[in-house]
Every structure is written in C-alpha cells, then in structure tokens.
View 1 (cartoon, protein in one colour):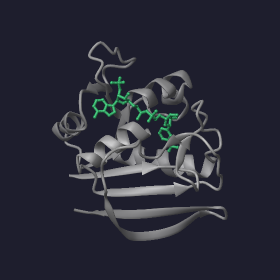
View 2 (cartoon, helix red, strand yellow):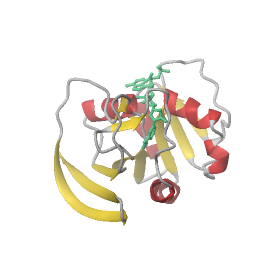
View 3 (cartoon, helix red, strand yellow):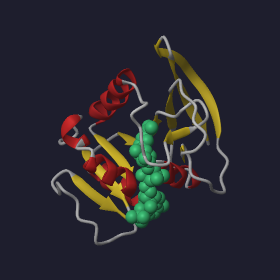
Length: 174
Ligand SMILES: NC(=O)c1ccc[n+]([C@@H]2O[C@H](COP(=O)([O-])OP(=O)(O)OC[C@H]3O[C@@H](n4cnc5c(N)ncnc54)[C@H](OP(=O)(O)O)[C@@H]3O)[C@@H](O)[C@H]2O)c1
C-alpha cells in the first residue's frame, strides 16, 4: 500500500488564507490534483476540509461523488452527506484501514494542514506531491499544522505544471 499526500501550497507554505479562501489555486493545479484523486478513487480529508468542500459544492463540481472519501474526526456524531461513499474515522490509521479493506493500493491524503500533520507525526506517508502556487500571503493555514515531528525527504522529480507553477515530488525517507 502506498500513501500519497498531495497539496497545493503557496511559495511560503500556506494552503488557504485565514478565511479558508483557496481561489488563488489555479485551474491547471486543480486538474492535476483532482485527476490524481480520481485515478486513485479515494481520498482522506480532515473534518474542516470536508465541511468546506460541502459548503462549496465541491463533491458535485469536481465529480468527486464516486470517490471513496474518509473524513477524519473526533466527532462521533458527524453525519456525512453520502454514506455510500463517505466514511468517518477517528484516526489516520483507522482511515487507512477502511480504504485498505476496500482493496485500494494507492491512498491519497488530501489535507488540510491539521490532517497532514497527523499523518506525518505517525509516519504514515510514503510520498508527497506539492504543486507550488506562485503567490505569497502573510497569514493563513499552514501546509502542516504545528507539531512535534521531523520528516526527511528525497526529491524524486521536479516538473513544470505551467509556466508559473512547479510540482515537487518527494519520497519520504523512513
Ligand atoms: N491548497 C490545498 O491544497 C488544500 C487542500 C485541502 C484543504 N485545503 C484547505 O485547508 C484548510 C483546512 O485545513 P485545517 O488544518 O484547518 O483543517 P483539516 O486538516 O481539514 O481538519 C482538521 C480536523 O481534522 C480532524 N483531525 C485531524 N487530525 C486528526 C486526528 N489525528 N484524529 C482525529 N481527528 C483528526 C479534526 O476534526 P475534529 O475537530 O472534528 O475532531 C481536526 O479538527 C481549508 O481552508 C481547506 O480549504 C487546502
């Protein structure tokens, strides 16, 4: 099983503004990101990202309705909008177990920053894709929430997504 974390940060490592605005993410990036999620057929997201995606009608707009999605949350009472495809898990390990039991070999971890930090802290990620968006802002939500962890990476590939955007592809050194 391979666990891939895929995100679109700013040059200075934010994934959203303080008010959760991500409209600065380009269409090219979104196509790459959503394309990989569709290919894998699954994603794991944090509870905040799930609620924002619901509010923005992202499951319909991005054709994610058939993507097996696990929402990580401590809130046992969270009701998901499409229980045939969306599940909840109390921890990153439980989320991986749900998707592994459904036969997935490649599992996508798709933010936000709190969830990303949880996965790194537990050493559960194998590879990271970062699409660096050509923007800097002073405040926002970090790619990885603050925490006590350190992860070393090996750079596997750098490619241009567009004239203005690069994609960094890393393997995590275990
Ligand atoms: N640019 C990008 O590529 C990108 C991609 C995805 C998201 N985003 C943005 O990122 C922002 C959200 O990030 P965020 O850091 O605020 O929130 P988040 O990571 O989406 O969600 C945080 C929540 O996930 C749950 N969680 C995380 N780790 C857990 C653990 N170990 N055990 C149990 N539950 C756990 C908790 O839910 P409970 O509080 O319910 O327990 C926690 O409050 C949004 O603005 C979103 O749009 C950007």
